[in-house]
Image (tube, rainbow, N blue to C red):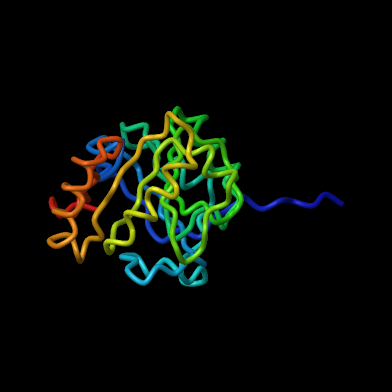
Length: 205
């Protein structure tokens, strides 16, 4: 008797075509895949609805990628939640098959899976990243919530590889207060660059 294997699926909070609003790839057309489930629990998280993995429908990877491929852009950004709570090998395999550049936005707190052309690491104090992911990051993005986060940023800047891009990004709700501090800090420490959530200013997804 032959056992049929079901199509692999992932819990998807939302998936949409837009522009990347922050970090190194800011301004590029991108298909976002936001996966449900997070065990990090940042108090200032702006997508807390993603945390409960059971709230989000499971969508077959084949269907998910074919929908993404309908759009002309070939940058796929997988985010969450914490996307590395899931095995992403099949997802990235199929995305590459359709010609996508694969990007992930992660806290790095779960083991790495998938084949990534770009890893954006955004470590959180609530659950530290794994050292092996820190060393592989192409982009380090630190969310600045208060002044002590600059010291936190330097802690990880000292651990990433030499070619890793370094970004400081104000926490959205405190941007009016924090952004001037970041501007001053970058002028004194020019290895860093400013990342803004431009999509929020433009009111796009």
